[in-house]
Length: 459
Image 1 (tube, rainbow, N blue to C red):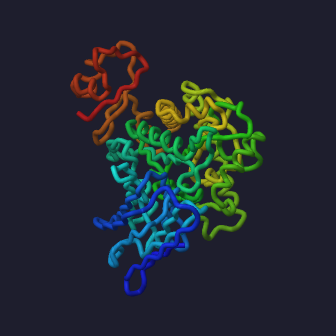
Image 2 (image 1 turned 135 degrees about the horizontal axis):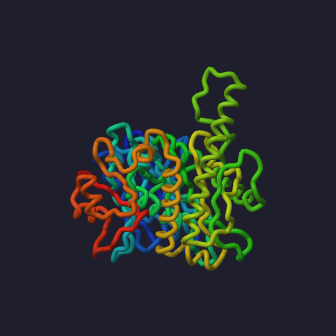
Image 3 (image 1 turned 180 degrees about the vertical axis):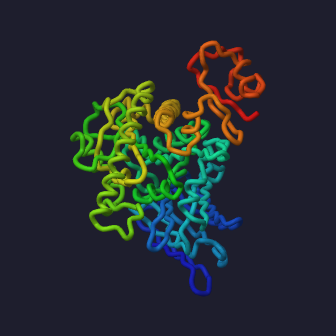
């Protein structure tokens, strides 16, 4: 086992012990940079590897796994970690061929990210982390593939509907995998990114990811992230596997306070819950000073209402997903998924398809399928909140004041009526026809139809 630690004198030492047969790659360089609250660890590896990153608590640690790699003689300078979130790093060989590096941290990390780049000398790996609030940072830092979205105006008492999108698994927990090596953690992140991108292009929505890269977050922490950002809705995205290669299609789940709605629902909940040990079914609601009976009644009422909202949303998701993929179960299934147990946030779990099915695995690995599935999930969420918008939201205001400009300016949505034309709609909302066309990508003279929804930009 090799050891690299930081002593009281802030000196670093490195001992390397290589066990077993020679490994394919070697870490030839480790450099540490720090600035603007971010610590960056750059590693140069002599050959390609498949790194993964996850965090541990009590104490705080960041773990980097490099399959088929040994540490070599790389050593940072003695003052490399001064002023950073890292106290020191330990390393060891796993399974006789894989390198594990454990970074001891002096604060909870925020925004753990890993990037890789092939070079002429092997592979360059960059690990970035901060010491800011981990929950806020994870949600605020969207994937590079997620375009920035304009904020819906808060003036006049309207607000965005906040949606937490949770890509299942991650880091050391790959989730399910197909016969051809497709991993659940990878495909669901791709789908989740598309959900967030689609929602953030939709006025009235503010969506974020619970994880933006390949690292692990315990199940209970995922809901904490959503709660910290006052999410109106939580959707956990997964891909399934079963012992049979025949099942194919999408399933949508809501929480069941009792038994599962089917044998498969029960089996799936048990498999997903195994990703993290979540104790009990406690509530985050503030119930201090209440009697035991009142506390239980309040939780039961909250849970009943939340499940009803979740089932309604699930039906809207199934309608949209059915346009792009086969549906395995036509109704919303219910099971006791740990990640759905919070009584204060309506939530769903989407099993997008079966990796145990050859066709399902091919689809899930396809970027076009990930794109279409992500958009369908987003469209289902939008449909649900268009019909049942939360109080104080932009969509609630629009439902009460159809066709009227949004108070305080900003982007509004307008449903085209019979007899409408672009020039009439533009004049009604005091914008130019050209601006209206640009906002709705109406190039080439494409005609509008009754029932179409247009974005009305600020005047």
